[in-house]
Image (cartoon, rainbow, N blue to C red; front, side, top):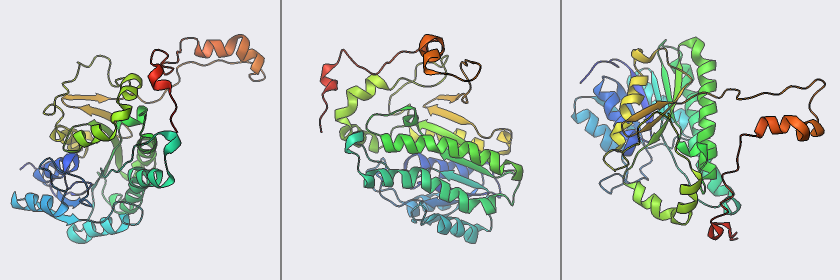
Length: 319
């Protein structure tokens, strides 16, 4: 047991298994009191449903302090989750938004229900948790929020709602950092890559998009980073937790509003958006000016990588 987070209170949503469970255990091992939240829908590596009660019991048996919550980390359940943590432990210092849900489909087949399910958990739910946690987090001067985004936000065929929600999480993170920073609250985001019990099931569910995903989803991260080991052990969920928990410690008090990509043993700090190139014309741009010069100057180094002209089998539109 360490003491980096001694006396702190943390909520971890979606922590009945997988990555969230690792967060909860490591937070507790560093002295934090943890509310373990999970609906119990996902499968854990041992093939049983994720279970908040079980994870909380594991933490308590190991000498830590934890309580369980099975309330949905959505707009309807966020206030209850936050209040349970405060009632149990008297304060709140750390919020780890890790709950997730999603559906895969072609853009033109996506239903409103599929879209709403995904966005309600991955974006609206994260906002709701922050909204209700903020009044408690600002009472300390070292509070922390860590949001779980995804590499899917860079673009992920079949996962339009999830990618949109997870990229929305980045904007939410930047805004929370700027808005709550004056009260000593920090907010960062991670884009984790890990493999667990659900990986094989996901591969089956998305099999018809496998080639399209491989051809259009370019690797992301620092150009100088070594090629990652993609074996299940190398991408174990436990490899995500150290950075997340470190971001919650005083050692990272200078870090806020930033995004980190984690894949196995490689952690990358991602760049923030910045202007790449600019053009200027007196009295404003016109279509003729864009045709003649400015448009070419803005875009001459760009290519359309997604036509896939050498894959006619992928150019068949199926309703």
